Length: 304
Image (cartoon, rainbow, N blue to C red; front, side, top):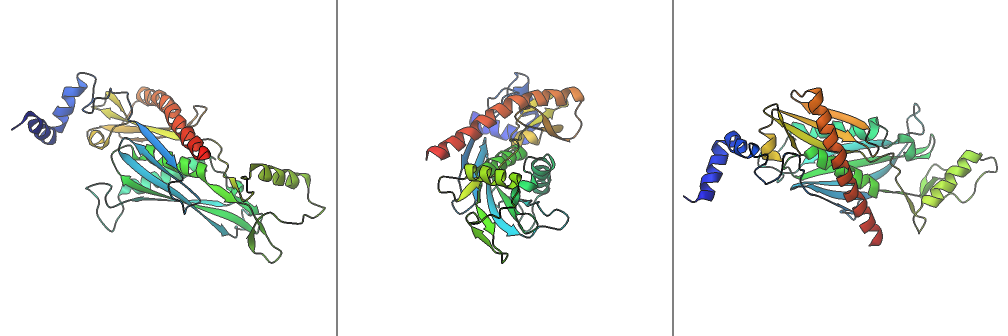
C-alpha cells in the first residue's frame, strides 16, 4: 500500500489524530496556518435573466445568488415599504449528505441570518423600494443556491447575496392614473409637488443608467462574514472547510460592515469572550479582503 493511500486511510479512520499531527506544527492538512482563510472569487451578472446576480466561491464552497423583481400593493400599515424575500436552497450535488425532498437545517439557519443582517440591520431599507407611496412598491426575491457545500456556507452566502444586491438595477417606472405600473418616468408633474419629491426625482435621474431605464439598488453598507472554529476549545481555526468543521468543538461567525461595526455574532457551542474578540479581529482583516473582491467584480462589470 502506497504512503498516500495509507495517509488517506488514517485520515478517514482517525480524523482527529490526523488533524492533531498538523495542529502541533501550527498548520492544517491543506497547508494553511490556523489564521489563514481560503481564497475567494466573486463574479456578478452570473444569470443574464435575473435583475441582479452573482456567484461567490470561498475555497471550493460555491453559492449562486439571483434577484427577481416584482411589483406589489403595499400594506396600509407601511404604505411606502417594499419587501426583501430570501430563500436558500442546497442543490442535490452540493454534498454527498443531500437527501431529496427536504432541505437540511443549515439552509434555514443561513436564510434567517441573512434576513437579520440585510433587513434587521438596515442594509436594505424597505423605503428604498417604494415606487409610489400607498400604490406600488418593489418586492425583491433573493434566491441563493448552494452549489458546493465545502464549509463556511454563511460566509459564502452573505458574500453572494451582497454581490447580487449590489448588481441589482431597479427599473425606472411610474404609476398611471389608472393604477398601472409602466416603465419610464412620469411625463407630467403637478405644480404642487413639494421640494422633497423634486429632489428625490432628481436624485433618481442622476443615478439612472445611461439609457435612463434603471437605477442601482441603494445599500446602506456591505456586511461580510468570517466563521472561525474552535478546536478542542483552545485553537482558533479561521475559515474551516467542511472536514475541519466536523472536528470543531464550537464555531463563531462574525458579521461586520465597512466601519468595523459588528452587525451579528452567531455561535454554536461554547466560546469565551476573549475567543469571540479574537474571531472579530480576524473578521476585520477578512472583511477588507472580501470587500476588495466585491469592488473588483463590480469594476470588471462596468468595464465589460
